[in-house]
Image 1: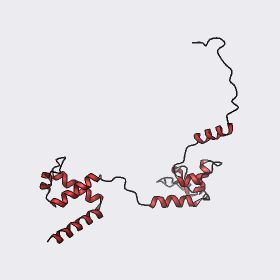
Image 2: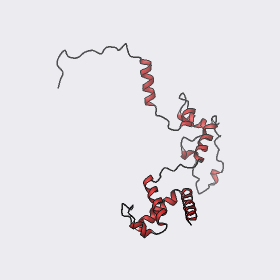
Image 3: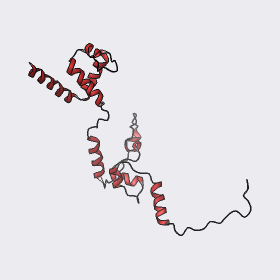
Image 4: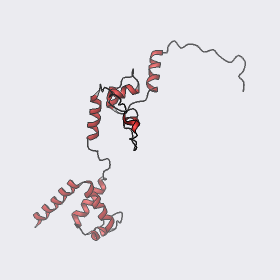
Length: 178
């Protein structure tokens, strides 16, 4: 639908807006955030992506960095010219990335506190008798003996040192009782 005649207003200049800050924020939002802190701190915004990564010793294109060799060697290809190595001006970035990659992986998954308490209670009261565990009143979910055994095995796998300490403490209790 067309607008009514005389209802359009001309655009007025906003004097109260800080154009420099507006442009800076727009540029910052337009540029992607680099997740890796090592690369982000060494990044020079005045240089291109290729120049930045070359200074850090990283490859822009992995296909060119590690080319596939052709199986057949022709007589004409003997005189292959080698590209000169690019100068790595920021080797600390590469060293930091390698050090971070060599760290052991952190376990992300753990068992719930309820399951740990359940397994400890069952083993403490019944030992290796899984049928008695299945008949126990604390077996709220009515687990079968095989299900209980698998839960105990999961606990053993997740916390081997803690499991061994638990068994040692059970042995000490038995020795004290006798």
